[in-house]
Amino acid sequence: MQDFRDLKVWRSGHQLTLAIYKATASFPDSERYGLTSQMRRSAVSIGANIAEGCCRDTGPDFARFLQMAMGSASEVEYHLLLARDLNLMPKESSQCLIAQVTDVKRMLASLTPKVRRGRQKQPTQN
Image (cartoon, rainbow, N blue to C red; front, side, top):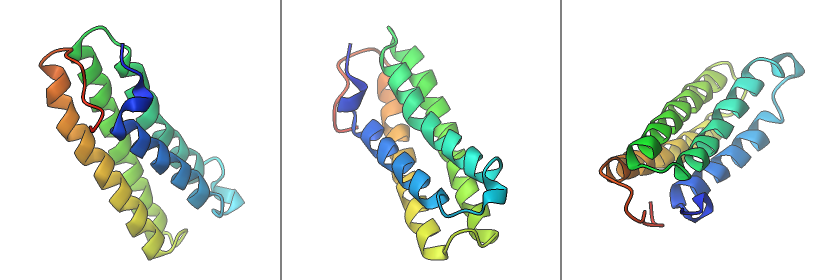
């Protein structure tokens, strides 16, 4: 069984989650149970799904969790667009975070077909 912390995609997703927590700390209190909570939960879900999938016995199982992580990353991306359009964060901040999300999604898209084919030793670069 591979340690999820060895996966570059998990490390990138974790860094994204930390950045989302930092960015949402300045959101108004009125968004505490709204957009702040939604953004944080979807960001956390990226790394959590990668971690859970990594311990699965088969490649297709892991690939399913990577697909869920991809869905969560897309959700984060939308939340960032919404936060920008609601003027809850500066355009520059949202662009930087969207670039991080895009990078995570690219890595997930690259890794998913590899693990779907079988449960060979997964490369740590993905």
